[in-house]
Image (cartoon, rainbow, N blue to C red; front, top):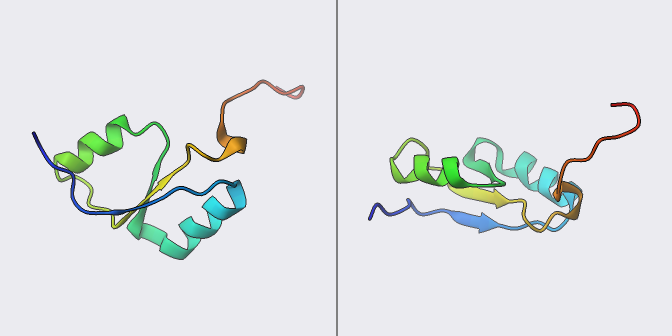
Length: 70
């Protein structure tokens, strides 16, 4: 089993909170939405972010929907 490098996990609950964290942490943070590719890449040493921003609690990011303007 390949271990993940150490990181701090952040789980904002609103979109403004997520954007503020990303701005504050900059390049040290990677966005974790689905996560499969990112976590595998981290296990292979391709990325070693100090912070992950997990978007699973952000209600505004819960899905994709078609709007009236396409």
